[in-house]
Image 1 (cartoon, helix red, strand yellow):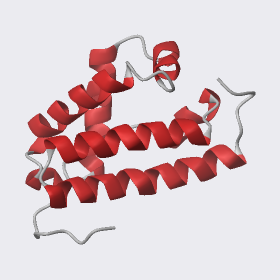
Image 2 (image 1 turned 120 degrees about the vertical axis):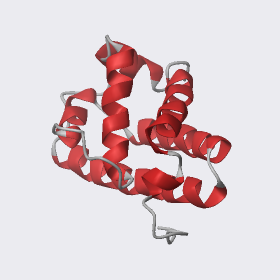
Image 3 (image 1 turned 180 degrees about the horizontal axis):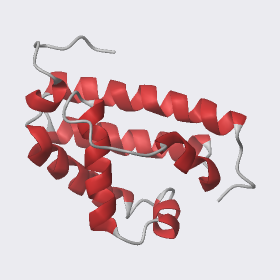
Length: 134
């Protein structure tokens, strides 16, 4: 993981919740268009504004900001039938958006956090496979 460029939390260095929400809005707009992962999201998310707020809560805590997210994030992904191609597509889009919307150092840190989370999710999904691929 890249070393932080400042003692300030990543959350503050990226511009707080407003900048995080901006990143998430654009990122998930592309996710919803992506042939490989859009169907997973369409099948599981009915209220996008509420989902984006929940995701902003998650990333707020993950970047050193207010820890507002409550829930078993990893366990919510088990029934989705995630495969390596889903992880790769999500991480590719995430990396592109981080680089497009953030300064290089902060983008690198946020990408590294996502990759670490992705590795943990892969391990959890491997131990608790869903009924079948989506």
